[in-house]
Length: 347
Image (cartoon, rainbow, N blue to C red; front, top):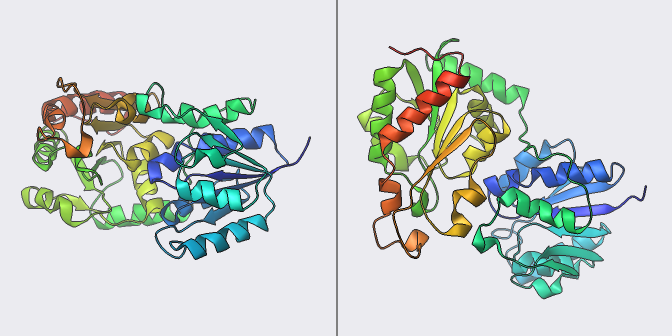
């Protein structure tokens, strides 16, 4: 079997990269002796360096040391020396199209968007229609190359040292072996993804009234969720964890309840029950394209009749998010915990 040197690129966010991991595995299954490298941003490096199907992780810091045009040209020359045969560009950006072009990679496949004319093979970009899940869009690039899809499972690296760290940290916070652990991620970068904090607070009250949970708050943004700690001083504050520790915590939790953001895909990859609260009714931003996958994953989403979704420019005060009530999330959480958690006990 011919050996290729293959570069996979995805330079957007955490969840996007997790949804790209089946591309790595299916390439490895199709070309077991080939060299596979993944080009990413600095903040997703850790979740890729633990992937057993990769030979190398290459970091492109487009907001840092590679920000200037000269630095990107030098980066292209760096890639050129690696003599890649293929570049599979999962997320189209002008920078990546230019970098892989100037790197002289013979086969460059991706989506016909941005500087898509620089690619050697292009698929029509219709992701804004949201006709399928992002995972399937990723795999479409392999299908175009006649590479068989044998495994669609997501991958997140669980490190024993991080699991031990979380075990000790929870123990220090008073969590016992048989406690029910509910992880909540109340933040999202885009306001159109943020379920109101007052709703999260009401949900926490319902969970505490019905169950005996240890409620853990995780978030990369610390100050945003201070309101929850003011209302519920007994919450466990694990905001600011590094991403591998977040994964270990989510694996330990009985359930994750979150906005539509990266940690829901971590939960799906680790087989942890998860509820994702979705706003936005734009097809390209919808649950059909971005929901967490797996039988233990669930999402809540309301169509409030907007003819056109303006997402973060919403003029209706994010009515779709306010339409999802704490009681609905609570009932679904009870259902998932009852089915999947060994620690589920009602008062």
